[in-house]
Image 1 (tube, rainbow, N blue to C red):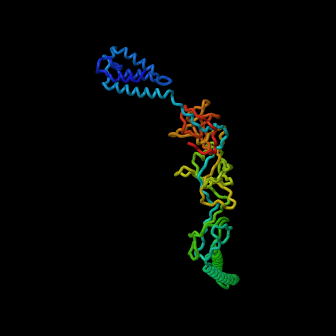
Image 2: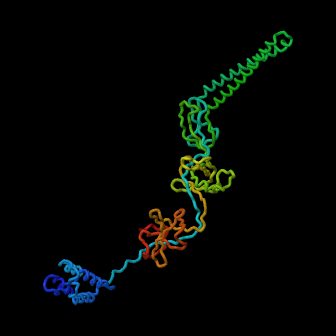
Image 3: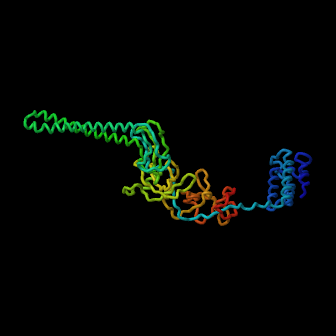
Length: 452
């Protein structure tokens, strides 16, 4: 069929010239459009002979009742329709056959592995000294000397500060003088009693005089004891002018300066024993009950349930401390404001590397899940609170499966339900796949950089 045939038909629209002169005269445009579309739908493209048959068939039926029974479009509609169809004819003829399909998308896949997985949990922790001693003077006076190097290791009873001892030495001397005076009075009273006893027995003196001398002797003896106590107090105060460390450990920066008037309320410095060092964590009530074995757990007293469980300390920057620790105690109560209970762990600290106030994370293995199914975390995608993975079947087509996820272990994720061991999941290129899409799977390389 030639295109001029269609053009000639369009040139004689319905309503001009004699009826039946144009190929489209009297033919409903919508019906003609449907017929020509059928002719265009061939498997290998447009077939001109088929369209020619359609047009001739309509010419033979020009006198059909459709001319009068079916409402027709405006005059210009056949011409526009024919022009559009001519454009479609040209495209179909030039195309010949369908464009080739793009090659399948290449994705990296990894097998779902079944293995025993340790279930670990972590808590934020703050390190603190095993013993923290606040160094305060026990007497009031002026600070005259600092005997230690700040930040250094000090021994118990080592002198850290000195207070001006002269007022306390004078007080001691005065107390000793008062003691000597009291002892002299006691000696005199003792001699009086010794002299009066035989005289009273001989009725040479009244009995009341002996009683009076006896009371004076007792009072003098009491005065001597008080004076002796005053001497001891003065000696202690004089000794307190040397401020000593209460424990072995690291001494902090001095808070008092030379010349300061210090007293029992003045904090001079702190000394912390840091080997071992404590790490405090706050765990929830649910975790605590899980540790003790629930309400049916043993009631035997011990520092902390699972006290023998080794603990890892993860420091700032992700470094794992090489010496494992263990739980040593739990607080007596649950904090009603936070619903947590405070737990202390102890870690060996040779070399005093760890210091109070450091932050880190305490990691513990609370269980081992037998035969768990694991996939890389990058293979799991989350959408509005639900999780899914892309599984490549034996026909290399993708199936999107919803999964139930469990604990995260390193770079892996435990899958509770939704996959089976040996399934191939997409670990790289998951953004480029959809359900039913054919792909070319390649093994996933863990160290390779991410693509797409």
